[in-house]
Amino acid sequence: MQRVAVVVFPGSNCDADTLDAARAAGSDAYYVWHKDTDLQRADAVILPGGFSYGDYLRSGAIARFSPVLRAVTAHARAGGAVLGICNGFQILCEAGLLPGALMRNARLKFLSRPVRVRVEATDTPFTASYERGAELTLPIAHGDGRYVADSQTAAELEANGQVVLRYVTENPNGSLHDISGVCNAGRNVVGIMPHPERRNAQVLGGQDGARVFLSLEARNATQHVGDLRAVDGRHLRV
Amino acid sequence: MSGGAYTVEIRVMPRASLLDPQGQAVQHALQALGFGEVASVRAGKHLVVQVQAATREEAAAKARTMCDRLLANPVTEDYECSVSP
Image (cartoon, each protein chain N blue to C red):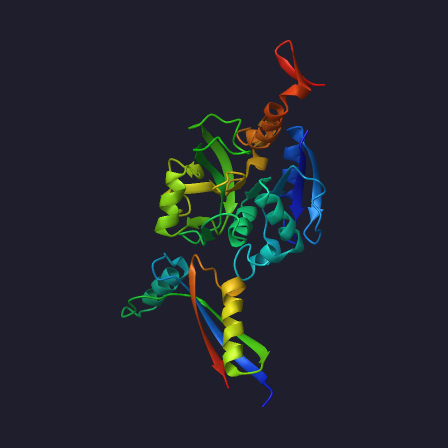
């Protein structure tokens, strides 16, 4: 069981759904307030969606200076898993933990609807349980989702396989190279615009997002294979 | 003189190479109003910062640091600072 810290900023509004999704995947998930400086021995940190600090100045620009970001940065630098969803992705870019930036949608409109994305990288803590090339239907809900990076950074992202999710069928917001999610060079920090926590059960219209959270537990299972015993083809923790 | 209060006006603009949908929307609205001569509009931010500093140069240097660290995003925006008095 992974310890998953869900960071709550003033203006976060996907924190409860994210906590539920992580718990549904079997993780020991708990909230960490943005003024806290202790992640309580987290194995993974998730920055949820929302409108931290009212998106003042730029989305994520103020949250990036919250006290908790110092601990999140240390966790990331030590190789710990970090996921930013939507506003969390914007914060990670502002904090310099992910390359690039997210700007106003090309057609200005706030977009809240399902989109199709393809999983381009499965060697991250949050996509390990997907098949590479799998196409998913996940909801987006953002006004500032247009991913931009300078041409050199974009070339590096492509060359290193750091594009994690890519829009297919349509590019809803004008993102460079149809990019919907990226990871850092170390592959432990991931940012995605779609909301997997809103698609993790059939009752929510589909479960294409569930494996984002299940990936954490699956990775843990393979890392600590000695703690597990196969019974009737199922793995049980002992 | 042992320093004093300076006013720094900071102009933050989206980088010229990047799409500025806000500027485009304003441009279309101006053209719809009959200003067909409008060739381009770009929209940015204007911030006015009151700062205590020993010299005008120090005030400008502080403002540039503020821009680098918070007020402008180095990936997407350029900035200019002007100090008065």
